[in-house]
Length: 559
Image (cartoon, rainbow, N blue to C red):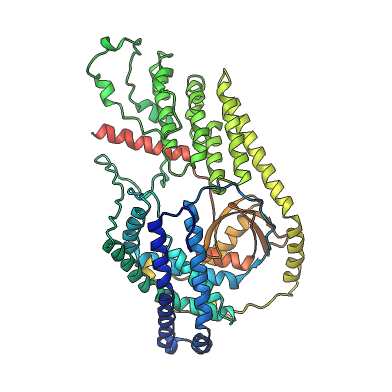
């Protein structure tokens, strides 16, 4: 079925791959059955009984599982293709049912995450090659994003949907997922390679990744901004080259020198500025002061803004707010030396908090996100019109932003009040001993064959004290904290809305929608132990910008 506005060649590729999906699933089931038979001698009595029941049930349930696999694959691909359709305003959200996430649910998510990692590691080169071909299908010859709708996560989630359709206990589903994941990975390696070969045979010229040549002596991390190094801004200012020891008056074009001065040649080149976010030339502000230290500080602050606007972690719709603060920040540099107190000055705190909260609500059409950015833009506009720039103004701006976020959290907590009341009653029953027994029957406590090769996992087995670490992590969470969770086959950003009075049931709110999840304490501990849950800390966008400018200065000096 074709989705509107999808490039025809990409749609043809999707239709071709969907036709091959049933055969792929049949091979996965066969591979999973073979692994079950081979592993029977190494299993304990309980696991051997589960495996035998699976081997007996799979031939009867094969078509049922295949239907769920194909349906899930189709729905995910169509959702991915919707990226090519024109954006529409967000429809009013509907009330969502609240389900309790327990250890059984998390056990399946753990196996699903293992399957995703195994596919990614086994098919790394094939996925990369296919990405160049699918990018060419839509005309993205620089591979600016992944246009392949059949990613590792897509197939793994489809497999998870099929496994959950098995009309047996969660223990049986976990055991099947544990064996089907390793069977799927090598098949997908052939599938991805075959897709690339067919596209090449059709005359599709693959796109090419853009290559960035760094200055000699500069070592980059795997991803821009992923660094804990945070240089001191005061020291950077003192070592910042000052291109103009004395700022000359503007001269007509005919009287300007034809050759740059030595100081101008030694100055680092400015970073490329994003379109739509022009910055005031720092030299225009520097011309108003005769102090060399002030001119160095002005150039440093300007380059910090350029680096922040070039940071890939900064959402596009937040860049105009940061760009608007550039001009008043330059003027404040001449009046407030504390501006170089990195991460302490309220200007930098305002920017860091804004970017972090925008990252937590990724949907650009989300009403809360729109209100957040409108407030930030209005605040930046008001700051830019103030004649006297000082830290007091930006403390007010940060407090205004914080008050908005507090009201937003309170409003969402109030909307979930009916859920919280029901969950509190459930928690009382759970702690009173009225607990529904798990269907795993101890399956997770018995050693199993690894789903993922040991070299791919930093810690394949629990280490002493890990349970205590998980308990301490969970007890450290406070209402309003953001966490990253792997739930229902997806990584989500969620805010802790309510930890139960007895801390047995925890309510989280999705950052990208109105969805909420009630998660049991044992499930959270299991997720943390499997590295599927962690608290998100606000990273310093300003600190990353300072590190980038510092590296550029070092490269310029070395050259």
